[in-house]
Each structure stands twice: as C-alpha cells, then as structure tokens.
Length: 420
Image (cartoon, rainbow, N blue to C red):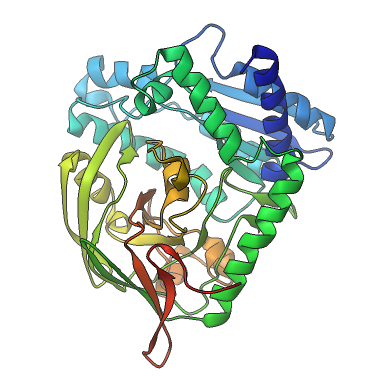
C-alpha cells in the first residue's frame, strides 16, 4: 500500500468513525483518548488528525486529544515505590467527565502492546489496574448508560502488529495490520458509510429475532464447555447501533459483529473454556477455564497468566459475576482472517463471548434510571470491571431455553441456527 493510498484509507476510516461510529452532530465537541509508544510525532497522529478534519467537516465545534504513552505504565510498575500504587492523576478523568456532562462525544483509540506488562509482579500490576478502575469509574458509569455518543476503534500500533505478525519486519507487520483494520471495518468498500448502514440493518434483524423469543436462559455446549446462563426479565438484545441519552444514534465499536444483552448475575452454572487468549492490563492470559456456581466464579485456571486472571476476578464482588453475553458467528469476517488479534475489540468479534464484571445499563429495560441496588435486584451486575473473554468456536452449540423449559437451537457449530 503506497503512502498516498494509506492516507486515503485513513481519511475514509476517519469519515466512517465520525459519521457511523460517533455520528457527531453539528455543535458537538469531541474528546479523543489514546495511548501508544514509538514514533515522533506520535504514531497515531495521522489518524487523529484525519478524525479531527472529518469531525470539523460535519460541524464539530471543538476537538481535543488526550495523548498517552503506554510505556509509562511499565516504567511505573518496574521502578515506582511499592507503596505508591494508590496514587492517581485525576485531571484527565475530570476532563472527560466534564465533556460527557456537556453532551460531547467520546472516541477511544486502542492499539496497545498486548504484552506490555507481561513478566512483571502480578501484585503490582493488580494494584495499578484496580486504582485505575476505581478512578476511571466516573467515566465508565457514563459509558454504560450511553450518556453520550461514544466509540472505540483501533490503530495499528507497532508492538501490537509485531505480536500478530512476528515473522515480518516491523514496518511490514504494521502495514499488514492497517490493511486488516481497514478491511474488517469495511473501509475497503466503495462506500464505507453505506456498507456500514447495510451491516447495521442486518445485525438489527438478528437482535429483533432474539428479542422476540424472550428466552429465560442460554445453554452452551462445546469441548471443555458445558454452561447455562440465565437471562433476566426485561433483558434487551442490542446490536451495532444504540441511542445515546443526548439523542444521537451511534455505533460503539468498529468493527462489530455481535448481538448482545446482559445475563442474570445470579444464574450462571457450569464450566466455560476460552477459545482465544485474553489481553488484560498488559498481560496475556491463555488457555483458561472458568467455573461458575449460582452466578459466581468459584474457580479459574490458566496455562499462562493465571495470577492475572485471578486478580481480575478478585477486583471486587461484581468481578466474580458476569455482565454481558454476546453472540457472534464463527464465520464472522474477523474470524475468517485466520489469526488472533490479541485485542479484545477484534477477537470478541470473531467469537461468542461473555464479560466478567459490569453490565451495560441499556441492556435492561429502564436500566439507566435504576439505582445500583435496584439494578442488582433486577439481575444486573455492578463492578469496576467489564472484561470480555471469548468462548465460541465452530464446535459450539447454543440453545435458547424457553419459559416452559424446552430448548430450541440458536447456534449450531458456531453458526446462526435461524433465519432473520
């Protein structure tokens, strides 16, 4: 891909982010958050600047960026005093919260090194992560209630690209990852915005079907997985597009292939086996199983990263329970690429998944208006965390459990078992 072609694809990507992901309205402000290393200027600056141009073109009033350097996290974990990990600089959180309260849009760009904190003291990493979650919860709470139009996208970080394509020189790996990002985000289509509109309609049909069934539970069967997950009364199946409280329809993830809702926090029983590694807090967790009883995690084991997984579960009481269940066909465009991305935004769209921790309030009818206690009483989960992990495969069958206890197919061998 020539530099000119790459720049044109960045322009189209930015336009889709602004028009489909965020759907920015005239007069809105936009804040962009991101962290990466390598390159002077910042390696993601070309994309950020194209997003800014696209946002101003549709009438954005002001675009601001919080630049981050992920390497600072590793340096802190290595060299900071051990009694300092409850320290946190809150000015960035306060800035983001202020813009959200003003009705402005929020874009997060991910592209982190999956192994950033690998090999470091798990106690230190756990303390850092918990402090971040506690302080960032003010933003997380706004996001889970769809207070404003928000979106998460990816950029091809150099270290991330090298992780995916270790056999290639760094520049070739990064170029190949950019190509994958453009293709899975439909930027290679003649009209990416129109392609996204068609995709949103098709996903919405799946969500409408699932909503019409009003299953009380889902049952999963696959090698290493025998698992039943309850669904609460009033659960809402959501797909690509949502409505923010500020009145803007937006698409929170680009790419997205999922149809999702919240499970009943008290009804999860059995064993699930991961089918993809989980990159969490700079640590890669691989080949793991999670055992549930009465909704609660009672055991975890992993071939790699087990201490990090246990720290995740032990973050708070809500991290012992689930907050999301998502259905994704094994033939999704991301799965068809035939390689891992080591990034949840991408890998979750290659596989059915569930999420440890916080439930999105908008996946329960009236959930945005409920107090924490009432949300929990209705079956929703409250936690500092929301961490997806992938359990789907071409060998997985999923049944919907009807109110009378009978079962019917939802997915067979990883694919939809119904027409929509």
